[in-house]
Length: 98
Image (cartoon, rainbow, N blue to C red; front, side, top):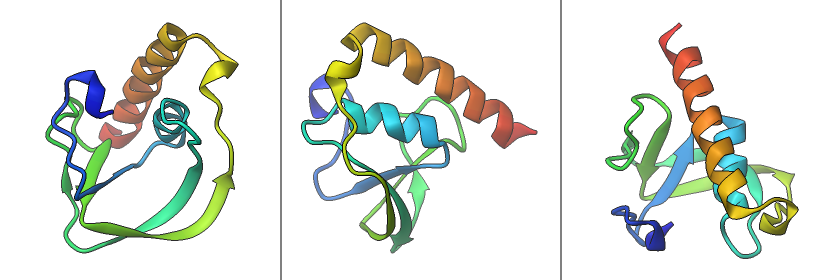
């Protein structure tokens, strides 16, 4: 997501509590895949995420399992992925605050 105006760091791994949020981010990367992971090192809130409790960054993550080995961006237009990200983030925020 380095080209989307955020402050993403190449020395960090970004993780989310929401499966659909993760699926959208995976789709926006070439050869994106969806993994279940365990954070390694300190887990801190992602400064680019405006919704508390949804996205985090850490120095590394251990893959527990591959959920979906191929998440293709071409499955839908880019704008549709961004709308899906907005919906998934809002849904996850509601779940976190409940």
